[in-house]
Image 1 (cartoon, rainbow, N blue to C red):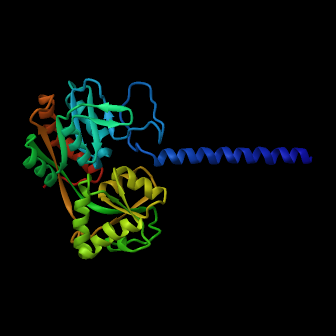
Image 2 (cartoon, rainbow, N blue to C red; image 1 turned 90 degrees about the vertical axis):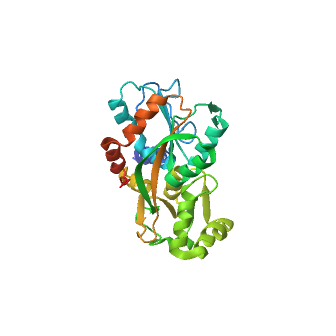
Image 3 (cartoon, helix red, strand yellow; image 1 turned 180 degrees about the vertical axis):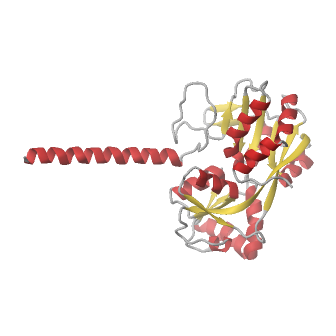
Length: 313
């Protein structure tokens, strides 16, 4: 009897360990991006944390169209490209990048991007970013031809589900005990928008506290790719909160990740208009014209609104 009981306890313990390991692996895969899917036709080989390139989408070989999107639009890409292919079936191979605009601009200027052992030397047909950022690039580089405004966004504060630290405002991010995940102004354009919003909410003192004092203290973490790193850090409880685009927090909630958002009042919030620009030397000029036309369509606007973006008024 003792042997039987020992066997049952041992078997139950082994089963429990297996289940915990399974749940841990499942949770790790949920935390690790990509969080959205893209149509595939080939051997699937994605290893979270090892071989996983969530911000490169689609066909890198001989594409019919190449689009560089400001990275915070990553969740829109699968639906958007599927709808575009439906309306323009002549374009079968489309490659999209959703990286921070500063990285994308460096890639355009230097002619390639290198990720690990991989080098991609494709130039975009279309580049998208915030309107002010794009106009600044055009004034400096004169790279673009036609432009179109196609969506709007605003800021929110991303927190862990249930808001355990009871964060209610941007001022709370300046508190010493609150660990902030913040986009790096060096390459993430949203950082400047966020800092301007900090200033509206708490003056230069709040900007200095979050972006200087807390960086030095290690309680503000500066990201490289905030639309991936900030939700991961919050879900892993390495950061308590992060100022993000409203749509980024909404998307994490849509897919069931343990994330909540704190609204920022309109009087201190900041909106951005997203603008797309066709490059003057676009390798696929007709495809670029067709995609620009598509971005102005009701279909495109409906997809963006599905994910919390606002239409251009």
